[in-house]
Image (tube, rainbow, N blue to C red; front, side, top):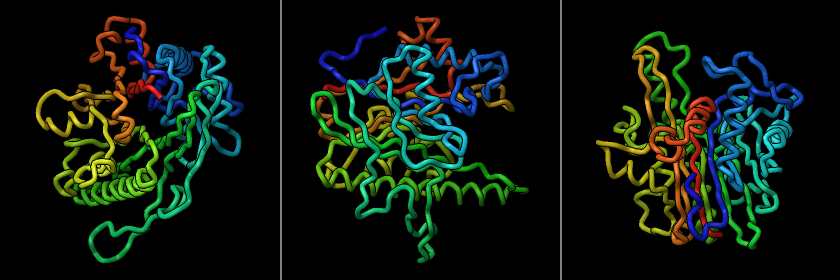
Length: 345
C-alpha cells in the first residue's frame, strides 16, 4: 500500500459502516456466523472479517465511525467497538462517544490513546449544543421553526502526543425519505420539507463551526453529509448544498472557510468525472450509483500544513484496486468507503 505522506505523524479517517450494529449482540460480542448481515447477500462473518481487514490496513490513529453500533438500555457503542478492536488486534484501544440517538446508528471515534487524548467537549456558548434545539425560519414565512438533530454531531477536544490541540466534529446529516406519501405531489412536498430540515441542520453545524474558528482553534469536520454539489434536483430550489454551507463558501473572510479537496473538485466541475466515496445498487435500474458523500474538511491553518487526503475507493484508488483482498474487503464491508487525512501535527 502507499505509505503515509512524508512527515505526516497523524492519520485520521472517517468511515460510514453500513449497519455496524447488526454485527453485535446486546453484550457487545461479535456475531461471527453465517446468518445474514443487514447487507444484502453478505453474512455477518463475511462483513465482520472484511471490516477487520479494512481497519487494519487503514492503520489510522483515529477513526470517526458513522453508523457505529448502538447505545441503548442494553447495548453500548464503546463495548462493541473495543471488542471489535481487540478481536482484530487493532491498535485503537479507546472509544469516544457523545449524545446518543434513537436511530441505532451512533457517531463514535475509535482511537489510539498512545497518540491522541480525546474528550467529548460540546462547548456551551453562543450557539445551542447539538443535543438542544436550533430555531430558524425554514420556509421564509417569518416564523422561526424548531430544528433538532436525529443524529447529534460529535464534538471532540483532541490533543496529540506532541501537544497540538485541535477540535474534531463528526457529523451525519441525512434527509429522510418521503415515507407515507401516497401521490407524486405528496412525495415532492415531503421531500422538499425534509431537504429543508437537512439544510437547516447544516446552518446549525456551520454556526458551531464559526464558534471554533472565531476562537482561533484548529478544526476538522468529518463524516457523511449525505449531500454534495449537484447531487439532487432540489439544489436549484434552495441555491446551495449542505456541503457548501458547511464549508463557508461565499464568506469574505477566508479564515472562516473550511477546505476539502474533493468537495472543491466537485464544486468546480459540475459535468465530468468526480471523486466518489459511496456506491449504491439501484435495483429498478439494475445499476450502481456512485456519490461523493463523505468528507474531511479542515480549517485554513491545518490546510497550510500540507495534509494529504485519500479516498479508499476499490475502483478509483490504484493501490486498492491492485490489492484484490483489500478491494474485495472494501466492497463487502460497507456501501461507503473510508476517507483518510495524513497531517503533520
